[in-house]
Image 1 (tube, rainbow, N blue to C red):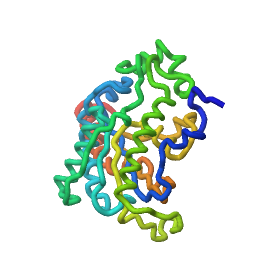
Image 2: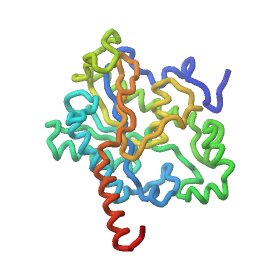
Image 3: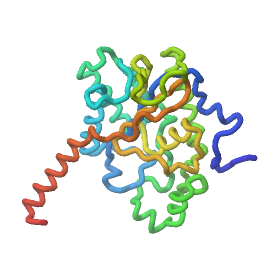
Length: 286
């Protein structure tokens, strides 16, 4: 049966998207971009260009420092050696976050060699059409029914002139195809016949790995696609600003090793709390 809304799991020919090599041993790291100026203003972003805010630049620096020293305690479950590549959405907020990650790795001489960095438009954020640049409160007041439907049934409703999730999945899966093929070419075939429970010598030390810097909406689709879940479950995943998610491919089988880590941002939160306390002291407010 046809599924024009893209609500069902991948079936038949669609299962080639993404074509995960059956013997692929590799690691994929997802990093959401830092806070942008439109986020500060509580406006819908979509594919609208917006720079990182001052907080977003600090977030990017912190996640960059964490990934430049991934095996500092507490260690991230990442292979030894440099990432194969840093791939990013071409939108400025993602590109600037990716540049910060690359600069930290080079500046700290963390890996002792250059790291390839490239934009891939297939990982651009979901287009939000007529909602882009508008305040969330304004959309709620003028197009509230459609917004509510998008939040409840995202495969059946979307922004005016925006992207359907089934179309987003098509471009994202094509990008994943190429990214996973590149990882497979850089590594060697693996086997599922090894310990599958953490703590029992799960060896990832020589796997190739890649960092993908992008957006919450696209990462939702990436995860649903890799784990062969229906698009109806779009809202089950969430990525915080500059959060780190680590996915391992074990002989072609995706495994979540870490989800939405944000501990590296703790210093920023401490600084913000201190600034708020000083502001309250100056104003006399409680």
